[in-house]
Amino acid sequence: MKETRPLMGMPVTVEIADSKATQQDIDAVFDYFTYIDGTFSTYKEGSEIMKINRGEILPEEFSSDMREIFKLADETKKQTNGYFDIKNTKGIFDPSGIVKGWAIYKAAKILEERGFQNFFVDVGGDIQTKGKNADGRIWRVGIQDPFSATPSIIKVLELPDCGVATSGIYLRGQHIYNPYNRTQTFDDIVSLTVIGPNVYEADRFATAAFAMGFAGINFIESLPGFEGYIIDNSGQATMTSGFENYVKNN
Image (cartoon, rainbow, N blue to C red; front, side, top):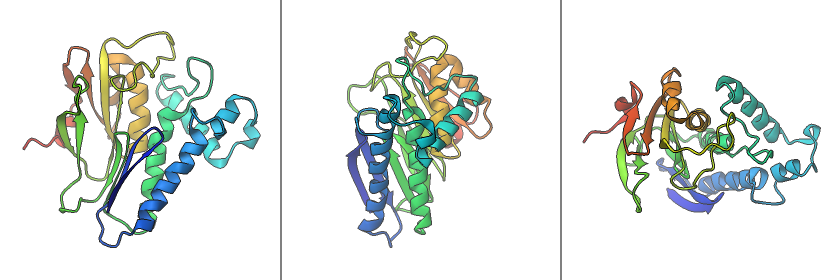
């Protein structure tokens, strides 16, 4: 079963390749993402994060999920030497750089708890894979050409039980910032794709590494169990030493 719905301002695709999957299983994942959007959206006035930014909810009143996100964000900030920070240029909390991957990972756990071993969860190009697709093959994921006016794939990856996330400015403009220079624009790179043990890990480190500029690819290289692929503003790609192991060449 496969279904795509617009949620959180982007397409969300859930595919379960196990024959016992039902509509209720698909709905459970989309219901979860609807909850995530209602809690963490910085575009919905009634979301918990917006109430926090308006001072209507105090730290001791945070939901358990909000407390977890703030804790994970703090850990990530320390692990990335401060390059990951959920307080944005306007001084308000915006946890979107960590929430999406975390939510995809949690959604995958919902499917695992329902007994599924073969599925694919994609939220705006950040993806968690598990098992194999309906054809019995390892899930394949395309890296989009950031310079193409129409969707165009420049690399196809085979991802066995792992996560992939891409940070970039080619779709949403300058929405990522360097915490050490909050007015900096990113003129040297346009996208950075990270493969990690799960999509939560890939997403948070992709965000931080992009904020480092071109040096971010060296940061990904230094992380055990992670690979990266960066594209600069001239279209030149640089990859980490093990990235090629995930590239499908035929």
